[in-house]
Length: 111
View 1 (cartoon, rainbow, N blue to C red):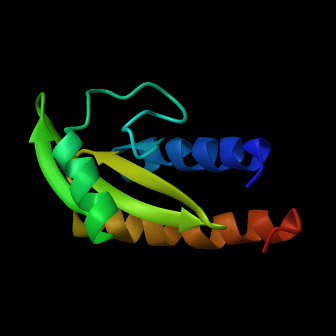
View 2 (view 1 turned 135 degrees about the horizontal axis):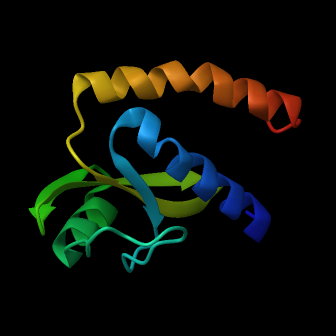
């Protein structure tokens, strides 16, 4: 992925935070944010578990519930860090945003 594509991806995902009721951050495998500042440090064990198992890892730190989800976009590996409780409602809100994001991508020739 080109730097500009990564930047757009990060901005789009982080922009969904207020609508989903959680804080979203895209981080690398070192736990460094690729966008806005992290509300707290992500425990290294959570990152290691997510990277090595390929599945989500959830923990708490500094008063935040943190879920780390490994993602692969166009061959680039990222981690989606979710600060806050991921509920069924959070999932439905995220799903409801998919049509808008897909239409935006289609309009820009990206899908």
